[in-house]
Image (cartoon, rainbow, N blue to C red; front, side, top):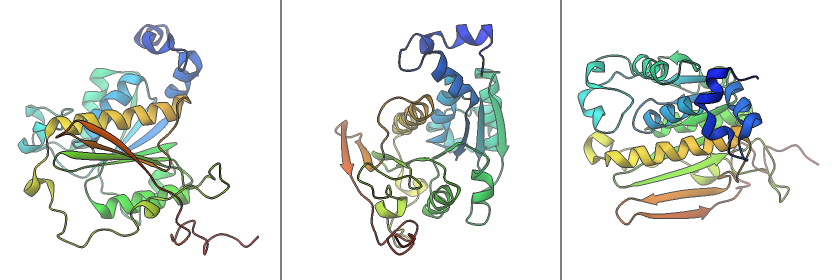
Length: 262
């Protein structure tokens, strides 16, 4: 996909990177990325994807902007209070980069609507704040054969990984699913919501930016994705650690019981 003259200047710092260059930037322009959640993680993620020149960004969120969001959800501003987050985020993208198309989906992703929506995109980046959405998105990505970049926030900690469970790893086994990492959600009430527990605002910016880097690397085609690796960030100690995890043959998606007999 050819770049327009204005885009060549806009993306000049990408174009001189050997790992990106013209071919990588063209792949970014051709890409269709679905962002789940326009909140703490989605806000910086959407901004950096737009700035990088992702051709089409889908945004799925059923919430409206509230005053308490603005401590960390930096794509929205005070005048946006009460507006649908997908509308506010879409306007911010247009201001930042008019070459990017935004598809707004003012809905909550569920097991019933996930596959149809996800199937319209090349890659999904999940910044949702609840386990039911995360499992619905990750299961649908497997069935739709789409890569998934997924992150989560705690009070002072965050995590990030990439799921490509529809593909096979170097060892010949299927890549791990989200359910290999988290077989089941925690018991109800065991993880307090953000409104009760709180969250460090700048940490959302760090994790959302890391999500954007993971997406951009996957689309442009350079670097080593976080497949089978969970990046963990501790904001108290400013510590970054990586935990390796593997395919669980008991998982219900691509486990031994779900694979065809050889």
